[in-house]
Image 1 (cartoon, rainbow, N blue to C red):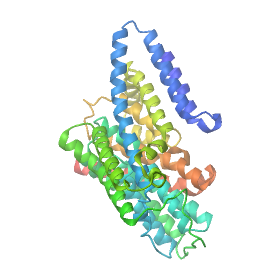
Image 2: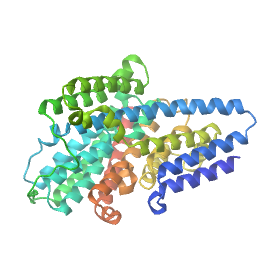
Image 3: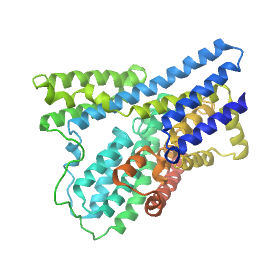
Image 4: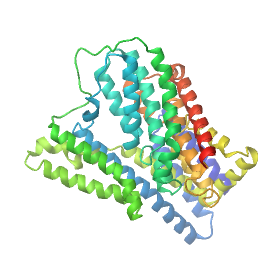
Length: 428
């Protein structure tokens, strides 16, 4: 049975990694993999009551992540529908490319920690289309935005899906991950920024002749923009505080905040005609969240759960410890592998591989995992959701990214690793 489970998981994993060549959506591969794995496990196990109990446990932990992501994605959609992100982007003004690069890098870094790396990438690349006319300049900026967004997401419990998974799973806590990984993530951004700003030194910003807003934008008042931006960001940032005070799961905080935002939105637009306010409602936002990604998370997390319940992941962890022997090397490799395959199943597998009794919350393993899995995806354009989004928005070629950006991301990745290890040994 164990061999069959491993073979099916590897095939499903390969189909996810080869999504574009196969032209099969990774969500379909994840769901088929989950279905096959649980079916075989149920058929070849005599204790059906145990399998049912384990499935219910896995479903409960998966649902917490899914509900949190759905709430966060909906809040971001509502803010975007009100043009709320222009509160930040409209204030960026400079004539030097190098200065603009630093501004964009830091705005992306901190915005990503409050939203998520995917949304921040889309917002910032849309801004670049309004600020820069030359496509080659926009490609460089898009590459740096990917690095900055992934670095910003790694040190915040709500900034990256993998960090959120570790946070909800209890492997990391809010303040500890922010204090422990912030400096390493900042170095991960600053080192590539230093190189790129030197390359762009002396060059001027060439603005487009016509300012065109990307996508289908609707007119909203400055008050509506500011209100929804502040409320959306406030709700997202307050979720960790809600968890700390109430000890309730984060999804409860995000759903509570979503209800408040929904009510405020209804009252704010109550006097408008239905046709005018339709695109601003939370109902409209719910229709536009990326349900394909949500379904993918469900499939991959349930797939990994079978390997956890059958102790396959525990055996793999023991083999890695005996073969490699060093957690820092193992996690560094996992981070680099996440540039090739999706980091969600990698982190999900790692969560099942290592015992929390031996590796308690906020230990070296989990914080280092958050950093490596979050930033390692920047090494290749296909290694993160932010990279894939940038690839589509600016038509970035895979090999262009390898030639111009991958080296910068790799340098930043290892510099951040060095900083984290030194900092950890000094203060822990």
